[in-house]
Image 1 (spheres, rainbow, N blue to C red):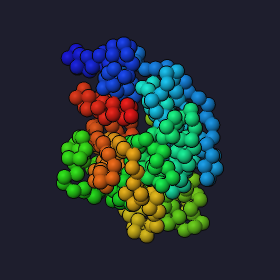
Image 2: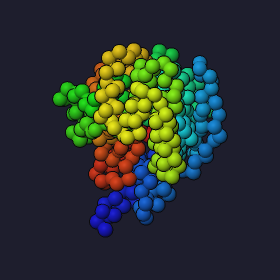
Image 3: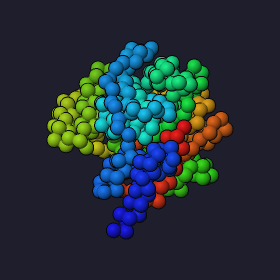
Image 4: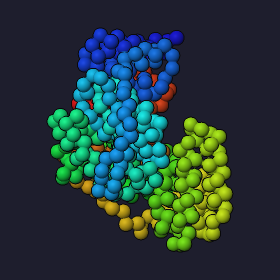
Length: 399
């Protein structure tokens, strides 16, 4: 009962404040209600928080033209005039703008006063981390900022999840786009891709300077976890041409993609995922060596041996600077960095490196939270941590 009261009181105040005057009178409490809704908490206080949300209209999927061809987009809006339109970009996931967590976040952002345009670079939906995606995001910013119904002042926000967070920072720093970006949010994003790949393959992250932890709210909670196998498998897919002979690349990529697709649906449809994992194992067993050995590590979730095999390739990779915000022109718009303190795909130490890099040129707000896994809010949330997280979202939602 005591826990219910502690969580329920601020949520109840948020609901009352929103019903009396919307998000404009009590923005901190409205941000708290937003977090409760995103976390999909249950119970009477969660139902009360949902009462604070505006009714959201979800538009049809349409295409935005980019230099590489069409890119899927979808608009989320309410009847109330929005403060700002923000582009919201999914991470490495096959579902693109249809990805369930992305859709949920887009709806809750729209219900909290933003107009949200989800955009999905095709490369990320194929589990590829390439400069094409940063280029496509730059094109999307230029297109959206030129639409009077999306950008009255010629500027839009830009939010990227996971690896799209780092790519969003790259796009926002481009000369043509930077004046059209109102703010950037990197949610679980990277600062330097080679450094993250070394972590995923070797299990250790470079340590930021000691004073870096003081630059982020919750920085004292950051620690480097054992890498998640998903990140190592994505790495294998992106370096397959260097990992196996040319005549094995296509079949290895097919098997790895089957595994990643199974991982993508495992949480939502375990039965379908089990069948997809079985397919990935069958494909792996049909491969010749050395592709077969690599795929065995994938299917066995043997992160250690897979990482050891890939680590020898890293020094020879020619990775474009356009894949890393720390190696690219920096944005001038305010930057928000949000990271899970225990992130095992992109370690939260990346956020600390980014803060130090960005602070001389732009305003930065950074937070590491124990409520967040890689790029979603954990349901089991301590109220004090929720209150700190609500301060972060308050500033972002009211820009």
